[in-house]
Length: 611
Image (cartoon, rainbow, N blue to C red; front, side, top):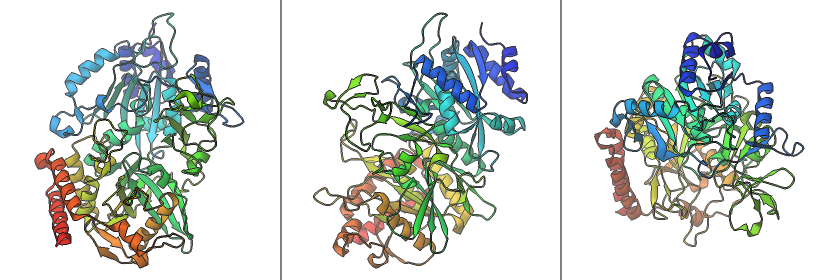
């Protein structure tokens, strides 16, 4: 027997409001699950669901002495990452989605989804998961409810959001909430045995900006299934933010404290993938006098505060990080954070019940169980962990988590950083000339394509404006316009924007900048700019530090080496501006006039450098 409206009402907490009950009953009637549970976020629920998944083969319990309360999951090879090709913005007008999103007509997509979701949860339990993005009840926070037929999703959502009864209590008070529906898309007939990772080959990750709805079908993995993450926190939230006068950004947040004065500075930063975002969020400064604390590693929601400054929260409660390459050498704080109460997905399993991935500390083991569940040795010739394998860990366990990371009002932002992976021509750090130039810096972010990419020539540039290309829920050019409006609204209080590049190489292919903890030297200069202690000099891409003002103590960097970090080739920049102009052209007349003016000013600076 499938779940009835009476079953929904019997399972719901006593204070579940009528609109929630009606919606859940409607989804139950469509998807016909065998059972229903309202998630309360309790330890008992976690223990029960994790034990259920161990019994069913979805989870492997890790060594309790080495990784207490930790579990390993293995997905199917067809379900290992976000599927951008199957991610849709279903706005009423196609132009509102813009040329960089996949658009679908909302009426047609709803008809398709109705067909896909009909009976999709048969033989399964429907979980109703109320959650808060951001601290419970905070002025920047938002509420949602995800319906899912995956216990893996429920447990990950417990780590990644403030999930359970406390969120339902706020919804019961009449606070608005975002409805999100998810199914792995694999109904079970009576007596049919389930698989360890149910998912459907056909996938739909759909967003309806006008109604704040999210519908996801077919995937059990990551950002496709944990709908509070990219779907809500960026795609839907960015449209909400534009309507309501705030900002939803793909940015880390860190606090930098000057030990001598106790001054606190907050920096947000947006980088495309493989550009050191998590490492910066958990930075270990190499220069004395500073401590860094982590507020967030991935997403920032920012809203003007009562004093007219911009305040940021991390809307997430956990870190959903890429495992390969993470080690005590590259990111010791992440390694410490994942010691307990964590879920690992698609990493390798050691013979003593611990996790392993390429780039982790220590010698390569002689034997592992790889992410497919097969025996693996160093001679196997393929990676033991999937390149996009993940750890889901509670942010509160990070040894350097900021004492104010859950402050409801957020932290006041002093500077915003943009950067990409650029071997040439982009200086170590450059400050905006004026606010609109800061938006131009974000709009023209590009990273060099590595040899691993098969669709584009290695060394060519891949544009990723604001590191938001896959995550902006509306037309990217309108999004730039929203940034300009926020700058106008806050005036002098809007944080200055900086372009950074840790990835310069010399003519022999050697790194010019040591990176990692040494990036604290760049932050040091930025905060000294904020306090007016140092001046900047004008350059082509922005305003640069003076050699004598920059803390290089202990580094083998002389003036000649410094010059290489800031060298620019005007001809190469001229060609890049042609490329940028071509990129902007796809947005037509939606590109704000101020952005086109900044492009013209950039060309003038290039011409002056050639003269």
